[in-house]
Amino acid sequence: GAVVSQHPSWVICKSGTSVKIECRSLDFQATTMFWYRQFPKQSLMLMATSNEGSKATYEQGVEKDKFLINHASLTLSTLTVTSAHPEDSSFYICSARDGREGPNNEQFFGPGTRLTVL
Amino acid sequence: SQQGEEDPQALSIQEGENATMNCSYKTSINNLQWYRQNSGRGLVHLILIRSNEREKHSGRLRVTLDTSKKSSSLLITASRAADTASYFCATVFSGGYNKLIFGAGTRLAVHP
Image 1: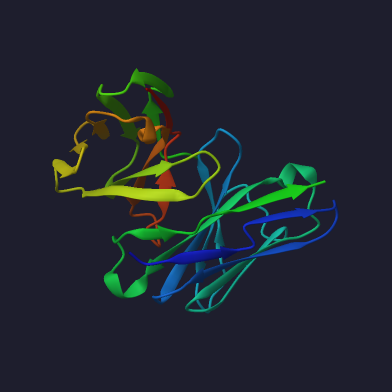
Image 2: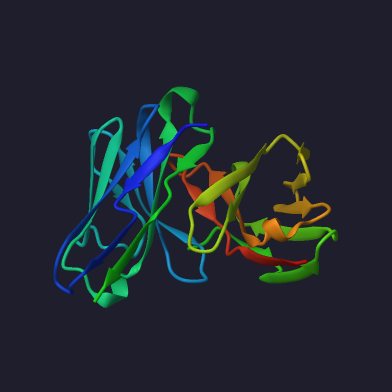
């Protein structure tokens, strides 16, 4: 199956700093990428949908100025957590869909990034 | 908000037994998918069942879909300790960009 990578796999930062997480599709062109957040023992919550070359669409309750998403190419989307606080500590997971295969095909998930804000 | 609910929230069984997890959703879907997640790890895609399908098999996995009841079930037969994980259903509904929305998940523990 297609491979999606995330970098870094884990990051620890101080409160008030910004953290950038990268999501890359390694062997296909991802016209659409999705960002999820998962708190311990909970399910994945969709944060935003990222389309190459256009602004991201954020889910209700997600602050767009705090979680900056850039989908600059067909293989890379980035999520920047700005002015991170301890409550932003979570597991962030991206997924990507191969745009050539139509809208109902499988999404491929990255391995996740664990963010800890001290 | 979450698309649907799963039950049970937690399931504990012995190796060799079957495990059944249920998922309900709220809106019309294009397809429904099941994923597995080991503790603190990424997701593993198990099965995708389309809205016009009623049952699908993959190895020891059997998924059913009842669109009239807006529900799906995942059956794992002859479970193994290695099946211990959280299992999530996720639906793709026609809400723009075909977003994948996850259910709350079932934590399965298979004891040797």
